Amino acid sequence: MRQFILCNWDAIIDFMAILAFFAVVVSGAYNLIVNRCKIKIRISRHTENQKGKLMYLSVENLSRLPVCISQVSIEIDDALYECEREPIRVRTIINREAGKEVFREYQKALGMPISIPGLGGVHGFLYFGDYPHNPEIGSKYLNFRVCTNRGRALKMKCEIPDQSLSTPAL
Image 1 (cartoon, one colour):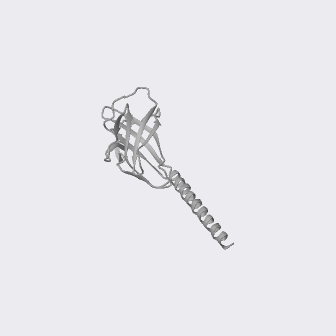
Image 2 (cartoon, helix red, strand yellow):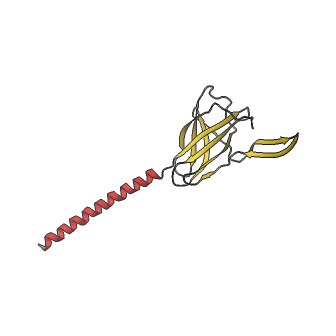
Image 3 (spheres, helix red, strand yellow):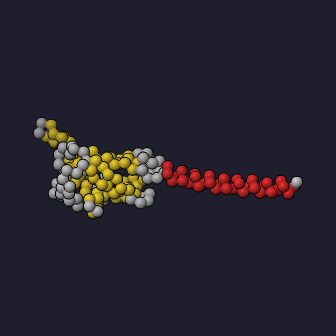
């Protein structure tokens, strides 16, 4: 009788070990799915001229962990056009009263890397200096490639709004 009880304890311990192994695998897969890099980009306004393309973007981090964006590129016909890494001055806003300048503001493009804390967002200008002039006339979407600190580069398609920036910058 005693040997029978010991054999059952061994079977119960083996069963519990197998159950614990599957619990660890399921928990690990759940954490990978929940904490994967989820980024959403929206183009609010845009303009372009002979020098390049300027876009006002909003970038949202939809995952709980912080993310650092190291590069944003536009992909056209398997060619990548990267945004400027340094924050350059892209617009100047001047307010005047009675012909006198009362306020001047310089707006700069976002510099790389862009750090976004968990479940947050950032918005600002991105300037693409090497962007070809009118690459696809009538195109309603742009393909973005976003490099982050959380694995492989993300590819996403964003709709181009009909409205452009009110004053041409650059």
